[in-house]
Image 1: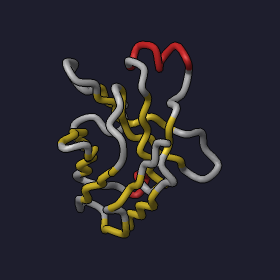
Image 2: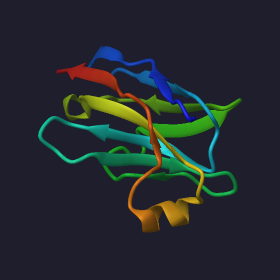
Image 3: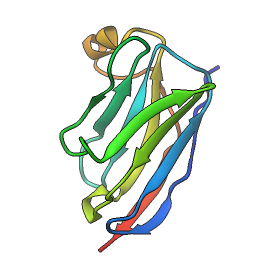
Length: 118
């Protein structure tokens, strides 16, 4: 079984920073998504060894994804109110190109809440 566990969420004022962590089995394609109430899940960042990470335009230049020792990180800087969401660690044993074809990731964490106040 694959169990992904996010940590590091919480409340922060606008302009602040948080770093999310995801502990669990390492997979080929990993990343972060978020869900805003009433909106579709938004993929934020994807990382695969040997390739440059890719980012959604909404977080490009502010968020940074990395992984080390089977831990996946999301460094979030200059947080804004519209970053408020539940953040999910996502992982898949397939290469990211195949994940794109499938349409979604195999494994999801339970999610962790991030609240940004103005």
